[in-house]
Length: 413
Ligand SMILES: Cc1cc2nc3c(=O)[nH]c(=O)nc-3n(C[C@H](O)[C@H](O)[C@H](O)COP(=O)(O)OP(=O)(O)OC[C@H]3O[C@@H](n4cnc5c(N)ncnc54)[C@H](O)[C@@H]3O)c2cc1C
Image: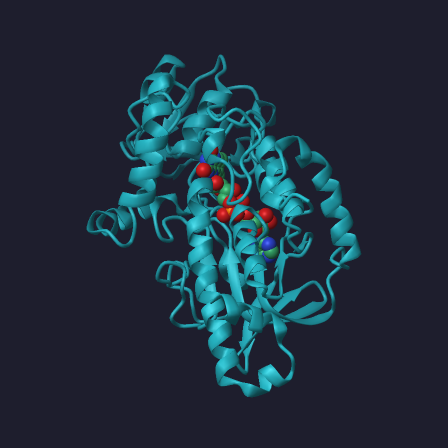
């Protein structure tokens, strides 16, 4: 019998169905009303599934809760033409390679299906359609409210990228009502916009890629600060040799981390300004006739105003102004004034037993990327297991209750 790691790519599709059956059999199709777990993982994307992979190996009793209807929906709901900028050889999570030629760039739907197959292969207990509405703590136990279920856990891992909610400036409300406004999170294809010119606000990767997707007869302006670009085409030969090895594996994963002086210096800048353009280049934008303009700073007579005082008569505005994790449902004193959690590499000093995985530059520049999330997941699960083991040692009552899952963690810690 093959281990999950040994199964081949062609065996992936039936695993999705097997996973559904598993979820039905294990009763995970609907949440138990009250249940106690060693660990609850909130978020079932690549970050939550990677955490699940390591928790399973530790023998801890856990569940992964995800708000979406289907595993992989975060990817499925991105714009139609989106392909990953990382090659398939970097798009596999721990234990299962991505089933595509190593240098090909998968579509967003292939990535979504891969995640679903991953959960099935490792029989990860994912409960979909379970949005967590409140995370709190009472008498040292975490309480997780989803729908009419209140679940308890000794430890909680919040596993999700920083891209959950739209960040749009307040002055967007003052735009004329006939201007069509769409945020990058809701953008699917050009048909959502009305005829006429488009102002893309935000010049990061999403802005640049959506600008290229929109290429049309009318004018397109792209406003915002230049964040630089990686100096080669991601699908070219140089990228195969250079992007993956040097930029993604070395610079993003090893050099720019919270453990290196250069990483610590770069982190605040990267968090506030965004990283370089990866796929689309300034020359691609220029060749497509997309005009770069300064930042949008407000609204005058219902129209956007640029930093240099110009007013832009745009028929459509696409907000590529970023995201935030939207952690208002976390009812614990762990969020800073900007609403972002205060943590050190994902460990929260203010709430022992609470962890984050997947956030932008959590530990390294690669933390939010597919090839970087596994290392963070492993590190966090090590901390989870150590805490579970310590709790077991200091609480003979826990052992008497037959807490075998925590015993398992202790054996492996
Ligand atoms: C447009 C775009 C393209 C990208 N392309 C690449 C690429 O090519 N290569 C690469 O390495 N990285 C890429 N990334 C970065 C990263 O890989 C993705 O953002 C990825 O989706 C992050 O996975 P995640 O699991 O951390 O978070 P998500 O995919 O956002 O998953 C989080 C999950 O948590 C769930 N959730 C949220 N709130 C709650 C709640 N309150 N209760 C329960 N569940 C909740 C959501 O439903 C979601 O399923 C890209 C990002 C974007 C935005």
